[in-house]
Length: 192
Length: 192
DNA sequence: TAAAAATGAATGAACGTTCATTTTTATATA
DNA sequence: TATATAAAAATGAACGTTCATTCATTTTTA
Image 1: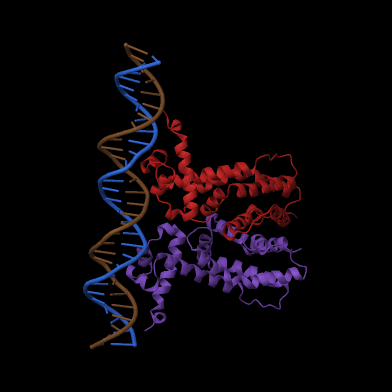
Image 2: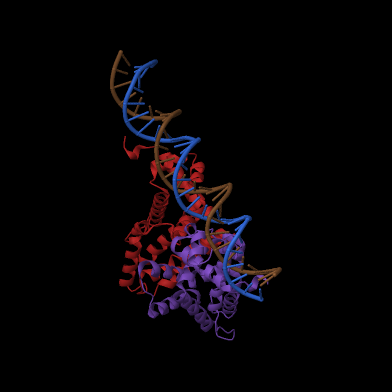
């Protein structure tokens, strides 16, 4: 019996427990013993699914990042106009961050600490290509500012991370009116 | 002899060591023993200056944040126009993040993890008031969009954090041309 | 020479990880 | 269908390490 057919339930429970514990206490306060307890599994079992703690965290990161980018591009079609395409992706991302706040918080923690190793970080970035392509098209059509993708990302997508942090910490509520305002500011800052 | 007259050199060395180690390895890999070694001080000495590890990290955070906001408002005068005032603050912040990258990285790590306790986080936020005041004035004058300060911050100041992360990790260089482009995008997204 | 500051070995708790053992699952046999 | 059995999965006590913190002692300062 090969590795893939081992009980996936246990693996998923471990992934969920890792996200939750790292969110609430940070990497340094998410010991394997607690992860195991929360997943209702023995500590030893973790090592059937993951090499060690670093591997566990790396794998969780890559999976959450993949689920994030999947959601970001759902329903997105290349034939859409640049503006419509951007709006769709932007709002998908906003929706993801609202509906899966746990995952979003986990990602923001990973992206700002040395928790995750460089290889996994690179791996997680792979799937943003459609957005980069859209921006290149926008620049060719003279619709989007001719600056680096880092700049475009920084001023249009990344601000959401801040708004989510605020929401989470200050009980500030992101209503759909706010979301729409935020999208307009995002588009406003990258369009020519 | 009171607490303040104890050798400040040792305290400062401890603060610097904490910043450096937390930056390179994260909170979970910055043990007191290594902080002490890097500061060329005995582990026991730390406890003459700080209650415990949490207190050490909290105090470092508050100090770095204070030095950040001090720098952000250097040369800023209330009689400046809204646009000039914003440009000055924005570029001060950019300069701080370039010149004191260590400190800036430390702050971004603190702001995205549960490393710092809530009270210290609040304390660190106190000193941003002049920027909020400027925005309120801008809104009264009909120059700045009438949205929440969170939104203004998210789209004008916060993106720098992303650009710095990128610079640090991908060897992407933030030339003064980029800085100027970035400022224009920041202003563009908050002005009416 | 007395008070203050600094030391670093010692302490006990907590951690990641291992592995001898038990439990579960899947397959083969009657 | 029921039973036997071997492989796979899961367990959790135990291990060695590392950590934050303490405190009896030494060094520095006033």
